[in-house]
Image (cartoon, rainbow, N blue to C red):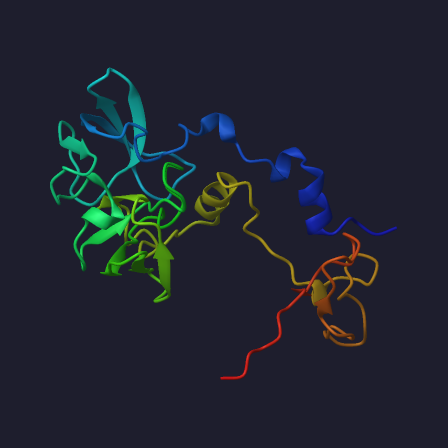
Length: 233
């Protein structure tokens, strides 16, 4: 009898594939207040994020978590709303930010706290303003946003984190474990036929088309999942 394949075990939600969310500080979002000021109380590392987080205390006395930008320091003033200065760390609507200014943590819809550009070292740039604001993402893609969607000015801290070598397998294990993932991946073609749909055979090959339907059962759902047709240019 073979083993369940990894996608099946991941879906089962056992402790190996469950994120250690009790160690996470919380969700880092743009402050919910429409206007106001705040001060950076603390900058710290959170295992759930690739960038450092900043604990910001608002004028109302509430605290919130924000993604730290390069050069952020404890005691820094954070301004929120349309009248805020164009300065790293401040949160403004996209319609109030000039073209070419680096931004991050962009809201998909006004008030959702931020969905785009949240990983360490990344930033986007505003290209044009109009009925919609056009933003160039780090991938080079141009995306349209509502001008009322807010974003934080600056470049996310934590860039270059991949340049430092891990040196030990244990370091890689703990880094991936904090995201509920396994760093050792065995290829399906290297397994036996009872353990994986790509396993078995006299030499290592898939042996059948590697494309699979989105409606395939969990034990078969490996390879290229419901690939899209290639568009002609």
